[in-house]
Image (cartoon, rainbow, N blue to C red; front, side, top):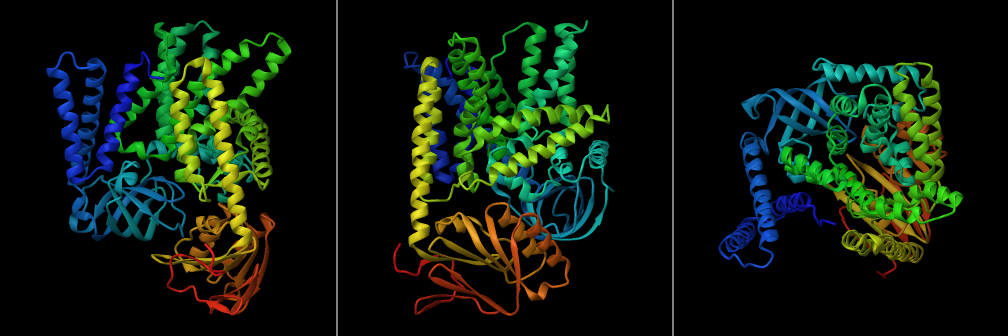
Length: 640
């Protein structure tokens, strides 16, 4: 894979050095640094050292990666580390929002805990709407965000209360431009498709229905909603060929597209995936303008190197990891797929296979991204290759029409039809019970290791053997997932278990028996849906809301975005409230039965009975289990 590509190999070693600096502490870090240093000195001193020309640059890259991270971390933290563990009142402008919180640029803060302009990552339950460009007034408790938090470009995280919001008082010209474009989309597109249209055209995903987003994720096409190389190449290559066909010529068309790449990145925000795509597009257009052969593999690693130089902690960005691995898989297997297609002599068969090769490309991207998906998310879509075959052409047409509609307004009706069709495709494929497999079930760690080994093996073999190797690795992974799913179903049908979480803002218990699952939210800031899969179940038969406040509503949305629910029981305390009306709207939209209970409700879960409300307990035979204060999984039938 790295043969005759020294730059890519050096950047890989640089990234490995960053990881070594993050995951080693104290004596271990010093010892590792010393060992690599001794290796460098040995390479300098001993001219006949084996593979000296290869080992020395790689060892230096490892040291540079470790040292660069330490320097960046020290410089960045020195100005803000005194705020960790402290509370303060803060005023700042919101620069970015997502489903987890928002990033604020500090204007003033009490006790001078932070310098002006410092960025704080605020985790917030969104009881009030907050958008980029708003000025917020908060009382926050600051903390060290850790390596994954640093990937956001911030070195302070915080939780607390927002007691005042001045809408768009801190907006910038770029934010005003994005808001204006989003306003046009809101007016021209239907309510059913406007959220998806904003996500695909401007990168604004805050208006995408969380449950609809889960349908995209379960069906394996959530990547369509994230602006990346797919959107950028689609638009810019269309512009390039349009300019190239005129008198502009190849060179000027490429230079114009390089400029448009930078403008497009500024408009949608230079997220890691957009930044990677921008570097690769610039490399392609520059190669066409100045007549040099572009190597996609080297361009991909060059993009990674630039991003790591700008922010070494961006290596922990899940978006960057997925974008990089999917691109790596496509670049690695595409030549082998193209070579196999060209060997087919019959024209009609070759055309058909070429069209169906997009399914294979999607499967390649799924295999290469599986380690990240398995580690970071709760489910993995196994139906994604088929879904992408249908969804990608629709999304491509919709994206092009969507951008053209800003110039030709009547085209927005056609784009709206495409986006609504895309929603129906996502919901249809996600409705299949086998559409997604939980990454938390028994045996998925083995599947993760198989996928990681497959990436290394496929990249190591010769081009002519890659397709065959890919097929073998995919079959091994599918067999492991199938065995894991079967074992999970056996556990769910033969075990009676209770999983409790109590404390740190989460109060819930799950009772599962005979393939039936009852999930009880006893109040708290969040819920953990992965526990459903640990009990061997793939859906919730009964969801009980003991409390009805903004947290409970958010928890219900979180659960619905990860697992299906058959019936919801709502406390009678919520009647005639806005929370109750919104729960009813959610249930009606997703065909979920609802029922109100008074003080307590008792429902069956297989051989067990669950009581929730003022009293919380699980009855199994002659035994009674009280969930309060326990934080583990318990098998009531005595078997594990």
